[in-house]
Length: 284
Image (tube, rainbow, N blue to C red; front, side, top):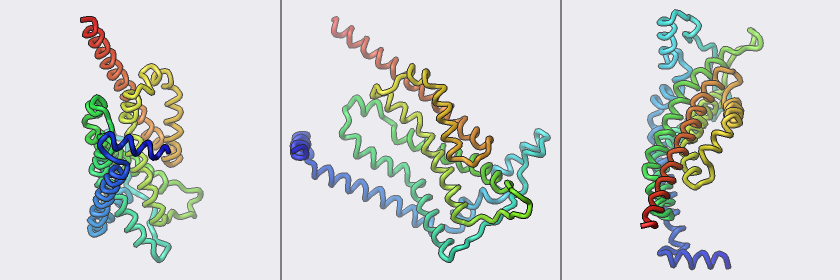
């Protein structure tokens, strides 16, 4: 009965339940097609994607390591320069390299196609929104994509190199050599990059929650101390067990949390101003 009632309501609104399913199918088809296209491109460009991009943080000539060495020369602090990564990457399974080639191509394909995939998701969701909600969420695709790439860039250029340096230099005993499997290296790099990309969506989440009235700037301020603890716990989960990496991921998230408070405050001011204008119009 509930399904029949829902279908009747949808038909009255201009689209039937089956029409929505058909639209969803095509949105999913186009999204998956975009991911597969970029995956094939990444798979073919193996020497660049795998040799330069994915294995980049494992080499001492990586841009982050060179920048740290330049900074160490400028400040006169030799400890900042990372000129050695004492580990080797191996493949201990017969299908290891091919599996990682496919897996890494899929990850690169998803990251490269993310703006289009989110645009398709937004195209499916936006017709169900009111005009006021559409206006408030204008530019969502741009800001979500921008924050996604900022987070991925932070994870790739900042967090991953420092984490890899820490893990490669950590030894229980000098007799134990660090010989990492290719699957372990790729999974660690992928987790750090995607975790940062997702966590950088915090301002967008706060924006929509504040727009719907579920959170307020006062609430976010009152739970600031609790949020710091939660952010530090999340940073400890997704990063290696060293304090520097945890602080590096926690700091931008805390900044984004403060940005969320500012966004919520701006929305509240706009809402109060609109309510005041409506009262004046009603009075007239």
